[in-house]
Image (cartoon, rainbow, N blue to C red; front, side):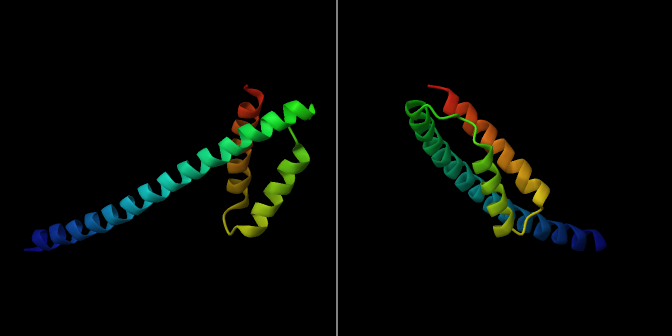
Length: 98
């Protein structure tokens, strides 16, 4: 009898996990769409910088963004910095491409 109780409990756990995983998948899809939109803007910024003969990398702007995100976020600061460094790395790569 104990096994049946555990199995039915495990079924509820699996069901609850599945619900959360579906929610996570939906959020991940939104994150990817937003990153795509951000990178489309980044490409336009790159074109403007090339025409104006401005440098692609702007450490001052990068630091301003990170400071602002750290103030806005309740997430781990190390994670926020790492995340934005990755985003900037891809942004610079896209801005350099024509």
